[in-house]
Image 1 (cartoon, rainbow, N blue to C red):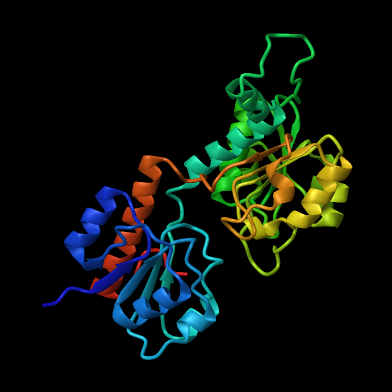
Image 2: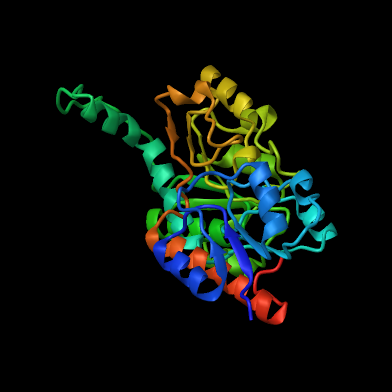
Length: 322
C-alpha cells in the first residue's frame, strides 16, 4: 500500500527527518526555504498531511484551495496563531500541536532574558567585543536586583508555572500572576504563586513582567500604552510568548519616555521584522525566537508531530488535537 504523503515546510533535526522518511512519503525541505502562501496552497492540494511551523501563514485564503487533498495539519510548536483554526475545521482538517515538550527550555530562556536585561549583560558583552572595555570601576554598568524582587507572570499554563518555580525557588522572588483561567490554589502554591484578579494590579506591583499567555484575538496588543503606563518606571518587560501580545509601537514610546526601564524580547509582531526603534536601544535585549531552541527539545517537538501524524493516519485520533 502507498504511504501517506507528508510535506514538511522547514528543515527539522536529522533524527526527526529520518523518522518521517521511515513512516511516510515525506517531502522534505532540504533548502530550509520559507514557504510562501502559494507553496502552502500547493502542498495542501498535493499531500495527505502538512507538517508546518510558526513561519507558515496558514490563512483562510490558503485553506480555501480546491481540490483539497490534505486531511491534517501537524504543527511543530505549541502556539498555533499562524493557523486559521476555524477555517481549517470548516474544511474538515484536523490540526495538532506539540504541547509539553518545550516547557522547560522556554522557561529557561525566559529567566535568561530576565537576567540579561536586569544585569545589562547584553550591553556588557557588546562592550567587550567592541574592545571598548577599559577595566573594572565601581559605577560601571550597574543593573537591577533580581533576588527578592516581584515577578508578574501573565498567563499561567505550563511555561508560566515553570518560570514561577525557577523564580521563586531559585531567586527567592515574590511571584504574582494574572490569567483569565486561574489554576487551583494548590497548584499555584506549589510554584510560589499568588494569583491576582486584574492585570492592572499585576502590572503596578511587578518589578519584572513576563508574558506567557496564548496569542488570541483577545490578547492581541494586551500590553498596550495603557498597560505600559501601569508598570513601574523601574520595571522590565519580558516576552517569550508571541509577538503580537505586545504593541511594539507603544513599547518604543514607553522606552523613549522612560516609563519602563527596559525590555527583553524573543518574539516579534511581524517576524522576522524587528522595529528599528528597538534595534539600537541599549536597555533592550533582542533574541531571534530561541525559546525552544535546544537540540533535545526540537527533536522532541518533531517526534511529537510525527506521532500525531502516525496516530491520525493509523486510527484517525491524533494525540494533541486542537
